Image (cartoon, rainbow, N blue to C red; front, side, top):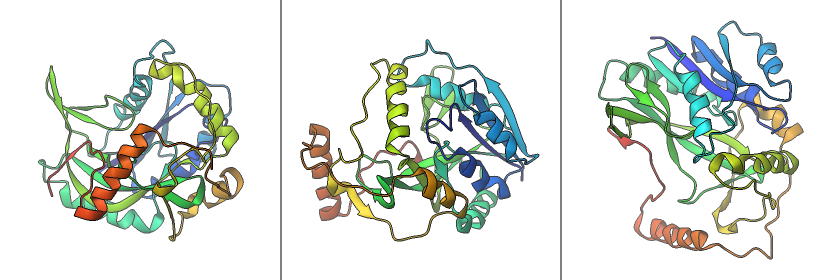
Length: 288
C-alpha cells in the first residue's frame, strides 16, 4: 500500500498557518507528500524545504488572481497537489489541519482495511474546530463535524472547492464520494491564529469569493452557545505553534447580535439535543 499526502499553501507564515506542523503530523505514515506552494511574499517555500524530509515534493504554482468565483482558486491549488499524487490513497490536509500522533495507527489500519474494497472511495474524519483559543472548540451544525480527507487515488475525483471532493460519474455528472468513517479527528486550528494574522487573511480572501475583502471583527463575534471546552491533548507537532502563534484568551462580545443564520442553528442544536439528531452538512455518503 502506497500513501500520498498532499496540501497547498501560499503566504503561510504571514497568514498564520501551522503548515509545518500540518505536514509533519502525517509524514510518519506517507510515502510521499506533495506540497503545492503558491508564489507569495514570504518564506513559506523555504520553511517547507527546511523540514528536510526526502518524501516532500514541492510543486510551484502561481495563483489565478482573476478566479473570483466562490473560492474556486483554492480548489485549483488543491487539485494541482492532488493530481501529482501517485499513491493508492491520497491524504489531504489543509494547511491549518493536524493529525494527532496517537491516531496515526488507527488511520493506517483504516486504509489497510478498505484498500481492497473499491466500493469505499474515501475515508472520513471527525473534526475538532478550535475557536478563539486552543482550550475550546466550536460545535454546532454550522461547523462540519465530519469530512473526507483520504481519497482512493484510482477514482475520477476532483475538487469543486477547497473543502470537499466529488466523483465524476460522467463528463457532465458528479456526486459525493462513498466513504467509511476512520473514527479519529482532524485538529483544525484556523480559528485560533492570532487576531492580527486572521485579520490579514480575512482582508485578502473576499475577492476570491466574488465579493469585497472583509474586516475581521474579532473572535468574540460568535454565538457563545456553540463554544465548549476542550479537555484533551494537542498533537505534539503543533504545541510550539500554539504557544507562540495562537490566541490565549477569549471573551464573547457582549454587544454582538445573532445573525438569522445563527438563530436557525440554535434551533437545529435544540433539535439535535432533543431528538438525538446530527444535522451538520456532510459531503460524502457513509457506506460502512
